[in-house]
Image (tube, rainbow, N blue to C red; front, side, top):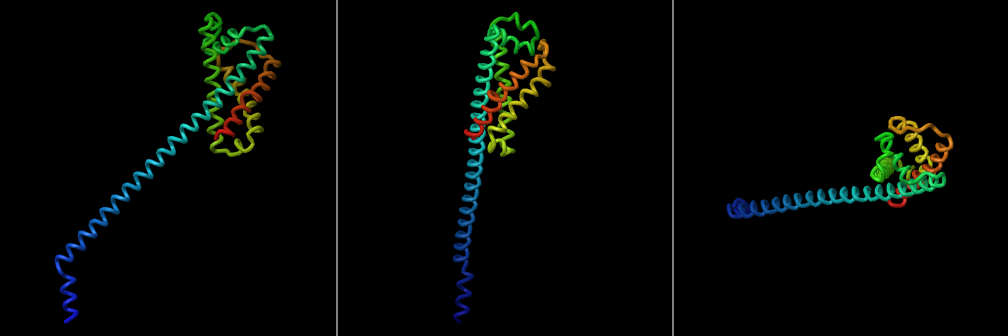
Amino acid sequence: MIVATMEIRFWNPDLVQEHLVEIGLLLYCERSFGNWLNLSLLEAHDSMIHSSLLSGLWVILIAGLTCGVLDITCTLMLNRLKGVPPARLLQGIASGILGSKSFEGGNRMAALGLSIHFLIAFVAATTYFLASRQLGVLVEHAVFCGLLYGIAVHLFMSFIVLPLSRVQRPFSISAFATQWVIHMLFVGLPISLVVRYLV
């Protein structure tokens, strides 16, 4: 008799409906929480990517500006000692694109040359930064790698970029050696140190 009563209660339609409602609410809450959790994780992931991107751009900006300013300042000073005006040097950079007519453009061509110089500096900084994300040695041994990177940039500019440009000047071993040292100390090293301490 007791068993029969329990079976009847178990199959009570009202109780079954009540349990189904409870199960439905639980499933709804679980699904809603799952969707909220997935959305939150996605937003957090996007936020981390955005933050990492901004951080990387900031490092590249600082590294590019640092090496660009140091490089052009040192080169301008050395050429000033030789009697070469700053505008003439900057026009010489612009001549890589426009040829000899850049020396007739005045300050406008000098500004173009300065812009090209900093563009190259930012490309060099970007290259080192991206490589450092894959090669930890570039950060761990920043001084040594930075000096080597400066040499690499100098050789790339001297034997690949300049021959492909419209610059018209004879090769000078003294100028090559001077720029070798400048690129080591004022291009590669500043970039590597900025990456080392800001990443």
